[in-house]
Image (tube, rainbow, N blue to C red; front, side, top):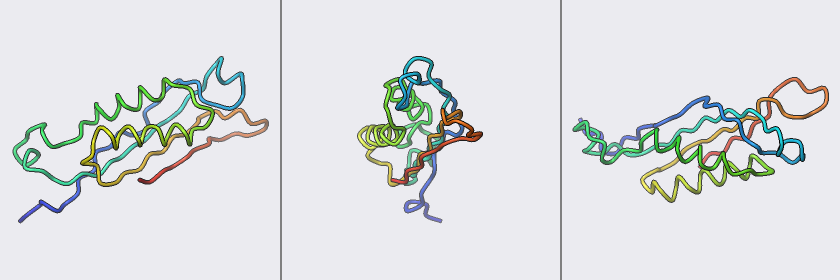
Length: 122
């Protein structure tokens, strides 16, 4: 059976970051908690079949990209998601498609008891 045209998904899920994204000045001072989930799809390679690192996308590398971008404040989590996707596409051209979800766990909205998210398919 040939797997050469099959897609494999590499994911990191529900990673928690303390970061300083938001429109309000207080968010730049105290920050907020964010949850990030990311999945990317790549074609199965010979390296994967032979249990070799070559030809795959490491979830540790995906985490490092997210960590680096999370450390740069943005007013909008939409902008943050776009930056992360752009960096992934630059570093891993083998990524065929993917999805990122960034959730602000405690948005500063009076009377609001919930979370706010953006989700981007690419």
